[in-house]
Length: 241
Image (cartoon, rainbow, N blue to C red; front, top):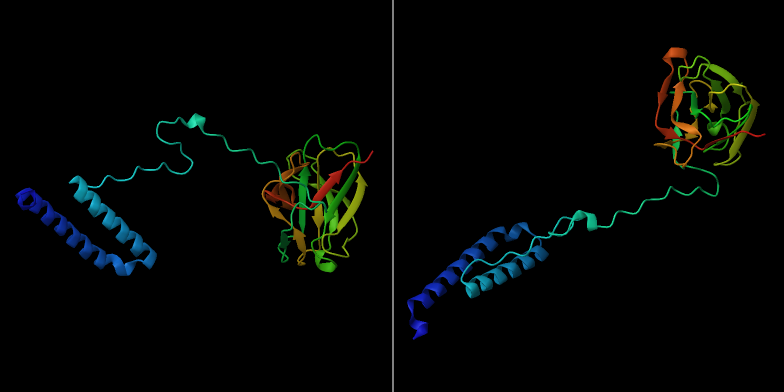
């Protein structure tokens, strides 16, 4: 009879040996895994043993899935859809570009950004800057400098407002002046060694066609002038007729 054949009993003994080995292995590693993992591991062991007994060999591993973002085997990458272009962030209704607030802690007392070449039209200039804090802690003067020697750095102060403050956080101050200079820098200044709060976002200007360069000057001292960034603030410039 087939049930008494050597081949049959050899298969049974192999099966029992595999089951015993897997049981010992599972019992050894079980304390290191949570219950959900234990249940899933036990289920996979049972399936593997059944598959081995039925086929007389090792279970066939599942087909390997391609990594996320890669096409399946045999499919050229060109058939994958390209990611959609992200539009620039919309302008806020209050005109602010950033809510991020920076505390100067007395380290610096001036920030000015260069108006990009070709953006200045005429001699009249209007500058607007928002205050993140009301009152003295958010107060500053709006200032403007020119590059008179063509080295790309501000070297001559051409305009300065009185001290300006807002009645509420997010309020804007405005200052207008006239200058024939073509290459100008605009921004704000505050008393040296004083601690004030200013808006400052890290990175390039979020506007599609910003009138400002991405770096700002925080020390104006001729050839020793220093810039930092890229960074931006809630700053506007326009050129009234």
